[in-house]
Length: 275
Length: 170
Image (cartoon, rainbow over the protein chains, first blue to last red):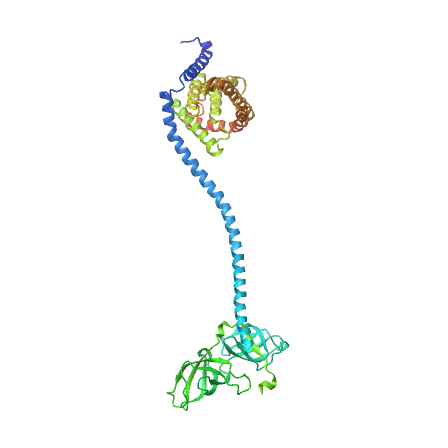
């Protein structure tokens, strides 16, 4: 043995310290020298550092993304909520705008009609059944009664067939039980405009000798006393004289789009006006 | 013999890891010196020849990777190994509180030695602000030491079996 066994540990400890001190003093004297072992360690550490850095960065990125996603989800939820609110607002304003346009048209119509009128909102429609009716939110308490004509900005809608205190039922002019005295505006030929359901209307009792052209405007004649004269009803869609009867078949397309009715105007005729 | 290759390799990974943990996770504010705990562990588990050589190698690796001048950490780790070895004769290891206190003292000792050697090595005094960083660093290392002791022990068992390498006395 190099050292006596008794002092072996002490000697080894001293040796270790001395080696460290030699290394340190050598390094202080020549700090610029990298040295073979030092560069070897650094070379070995570089790929390890690279692997660990990549792993760490991956973990960090995943973590950050997760945290970011948590924040993003919250932000997304908030933005979606805000978006829904804004959409609702936009819809509300758009509805208001469209309603304004419709009411403006009704107002213009009101100015054209020389009778007192009441504006009402369509609250229900039943156009799928045989009877074509709609309900409006005004009734007898507002001055409405049965047989009053109902208009939209596009033309005649129909007439009131039932009126309760706050609701009235309108029989649409396309209902097959609806008959209105009408005349063709251009040729002044008279007839009865009868509802034909989904096909629109047909102008009845027009003699084959009369001339009716496609596109002619059909208006109310005012003869029955129910409807004032000159209300727009529709335009001639087709004319058929091939039937063996006395009268020609005139199909009329109503001006009013009954599926899109939202507001209507009821002409409040006095009994005297009607007569 | 294989341990003289595996332990330094493991130490190298540990040093690189601790450096990157400090850099990436703690933004370089506080260092987590896991290699110090390894040296203390070695001091408690190994005899003077094996432990001494390994602590010398670990110190040298630490110097090479993180310090511009070789020898300071080599010297420090050798001294800490020797202190740990002496402590292991007197106090039975395995108690977390003891491990924590002992590691804390070693970490503070290391800080003091570095502060003393710094003017010799670099010709300038270490700032008191930098010195203050050693306290939280020492506390972190101290807090981690019982966990790492267990982890090192597991690795030791995997490498050598329980009775082969922890030769040590007590």
